[in-house]
Image (cartoon, rainbow, N blue to C red):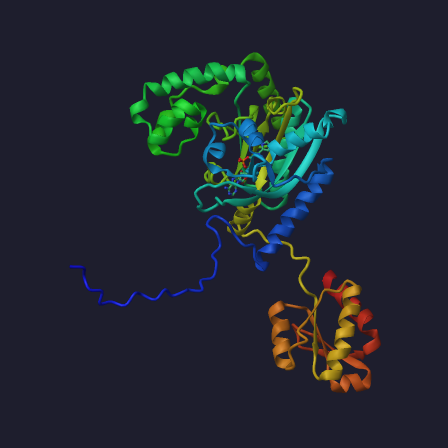
Amino acid sequence: MPKKLDKKPKKTVRVNKAPQLLRGFKDILAEEQKYWQFIRKTVGSFVSGYGYSEIGLPILEETSLFARAIGKQTDIVEKEMFTFADQGEGSITMRPEATASVARAYISHGMLNLPQPVKLFYWGPMFRREKPQAGRYRQFTQFGFEMIGDINPVIDTQLITLAYNFFKQIGLSQVSIQVNSIGCPTCRKSYREELVSYYKSKRKMLCEDCKKRLIKNPLRLLDCKQPGCQQLKGEAPQIVDWLDDECKEHFIRVIEYLDELDIPYVLNPYLVRGLDYYTKTVFEIWPSEQEQGSQSAMAGGGRYDGLIELIGGRPTPGAGFSAGIERIISQLKEKEVEIPTENEPQVFLAQIGNQAKIRSMILFEKLRQENIRVVESFSKDSLKSQLELANKLGTKYALILGQKEVIDGTILIRDMESGVQEIIDFNKTVNELKKKLANHSTI
Ligand code: HAM
């Protein structure tokens, strides 16, 4: 016998749930903007100072660009790309980095006809479907400097110097520059064989990921953070011992130039980087010697002499680096670096009564046109709450316009720190304010 249904079917309740921020993505709120502006402005002076031109690059590219440039066996291409089919037009990917796009643009626009090296700068969001954790986002912002068309080791040193000077300039002079050479494909081939044979004998002691790396991407074995694997790398063969004469000479020159320029660095034989296009010099900038590893690296780069050819161009050398803004900001906060605040409001314009409100709205426009950083709260009527807001915003002065002042053709100017108020001629507001602000900024 069929069971009697004694329960009423459950009502489906539609919950009006607000959409959530995606994991690994982040909003950049008003209070954080000063860090972004500070970095953008500082890096801007390096772009012009070192003779780079900015290039704007698309966020979407053909998937094959990244597969060929970064390497099919890398973590980025294998599991971290946001890739989708473009409605019958092939596979496209949200760029996980920008060096491949710079190389593509160099070929697309025939930049080999320009005076070499071509020096390009970019700034923008990158996308990697990594496991979100501290300092690791799925959308993050990089700026980068690339120099294409010159094989000279002086280029590598210049890039490291630029990066170091940038970090010094923003107040992070304790950074640690990690440098290595991973040679060219020829010397790397024999090194890889040696490395595989060493690790094969220790296979049982390797973590599961490293067992896979042994087959797919043996150089990344040196990067593993597992304590067991860390111990093994101490005895592993080092690539510097396998460099051919040309690669060795190149590396020695880079190091010599760094010494001459007094740039501090650490030779790190285990630094291999996670992208396949590198040749010869590779480097990373860590917050300090102690805060090491790819998760806290603030910048990374190196030479990529085979990249342009790899994606279909003529053989053309290149080198560059990029830096992660979110990680830099987190360091600026951790090290309590004081950020210059140039855009803070200077004056609050308070008003009481309808006539005063109208006059204030006109005065506000005038002050703004005179480049005085003025703020207001025209929707508020109470003077007390307007002055409270002025206090909160930290303006040096408040202008107060009430019914009496409108009739008298005056305005009050109040020093927010001392509370001293002065009556001035309404028509002289701009000049008086400018004088006071000029005096204030020289104190
Ligand atoms: P990369 O080491 O993959 O190199 O990234 C450079 C920097 O981007 C890192 O040092 C880090 O600061 C930041 N970054 C990377 N992934 C994340 C993430 N998931 N979350 C937050 N920040 C991240 C490159 O991208 C190469 N294109 C660098 C280069 C330029 N090589 C030659 N030219």
